[in-house]
Amino acid sequence: MNDGMETRDIGIPPNFTVQYKEPEVLRILQPSGEVNEELYEWGPSIADKEVLTLLNHMMLGRAVDKWAWILHRQGRVKGTYGSTEGQEAVDVGSIYALREEDWVSPSYRILGGLIMRGITLEEVFSKFFANSGDPEKGRNLPVEWGSRARGILSIGAPIGPHLI
Image (cartoon, rainbow, N blue to C red; front, side, top):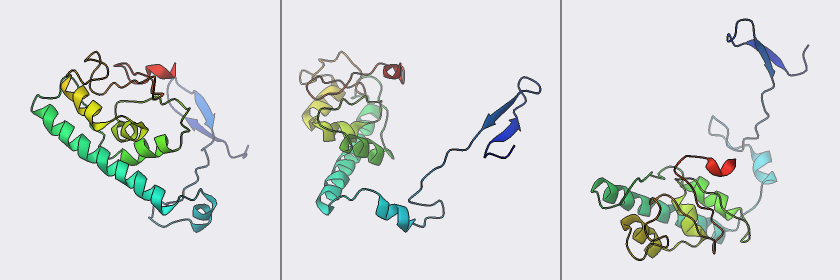
């Protein structure tokens, strides 16, 4: 049978096989670093001003994250902190793609996206320090955000509980 399906012996339990088909992946940026121009032209176009806004939020998220990391290592950020470094484009891009009425279902590492969604720097640092300016009054860890007014679901300590 050659319908794109491949049979592979996975070894557990003995002689058990599974059929699978590799998903088709559309890659604008190829592993070699070259751009697939046909797919690039097919995608959405974003105005230069919007690109700069996205870049600004990515850079702001990175800067706040760096400060949070330093402050956490000094023991000044209360509780657990998970750095968002290297994930800024995912954070900001995913929030950018949402409509205002869409809810955000965040994970630990979405600081830049939350800032883009309207969380202020005052709120961010108040949450880090668990002071009176913290919107949640210190009831959650610094990486656990929630805001009904901004359409942000609260997260719990286990990763992914909101997916159930």
